[in-house]
Length: 288
Ligand SMILES: Nc1ncnc2c1ncn2[C@@H]1O[C@H](COP(=O)(O)OP(=O)(O)OP(=O)(O)O)[C@@H](O)[C@H]1O
Ligand SMILES: [Mg+2]
Image (tube, rainbow, N blue to C red):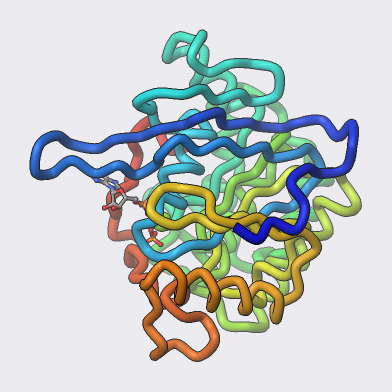
């Protein structure tokens, strides 16, 4: 392991932490260890990218740390609160108060308009949106002229931006985003990434984002690399080239390289759930 720095800035608060987190799906022949004793801190006001080959456990890690999915062993903390100590209802409340999530498969509600989808988590929580902030988010994501549209009337990229807006609208303490730019062209993708980065730099938002794109990862302050359910590397102040180098090294070392994807090796060859297809992670718990 070629960790460049094992600890972040001294004294930085931890927004979420996994300790020896293990998640096993199925039993017998279908048993899959999706997470194998993963320990990681996501520090407050830091932008972390998670990279790794398809099936390496990225979505599972985010779902478990966000309180969306249960886990087999280990512990998870959001802020000062241990999830293991909470009942289901309390986890739901904690998640609604503190967590924003952009799902790999969007999970927009088809019968609601874009605006209704964006404010839904706050409506459910009975919380009044900070109107100025919500308008800010909508403008930055270029959604102002699509607010009355329903998801099926929006392009894949627009749906993805609505999902990003929904996660950010309540200004949660931590935002998890699973491939938030996976369906955007490079211009729209750069805007979303710039917005996420700005929300960290300017508003001290904490963001954890899965991506397979080294350029997207370079917007983050740190990149955590997963392979086979384990953290295999951790890179601070990433540049796209440095990320690419790590990806190549890790892919080579792990024997997962598929050199058909320029630069991205085995990491870039992920097959992702189709938008709206529900995927494996469609709502393990409620999705907003
Ligand atoms: N509900 C489930 N039941 C059984 N196995 C599952 C389930 N969800 C995920 N897995 C398995 O757990 C492992 C990790 O899956 P996960 O979705 O976290 O991968 P990922 O890194 O997000 O991949 P991708 O880049 O393709 O989205 C995979 O081997 C997957 O097949
Ligand atoms: Mg995934």
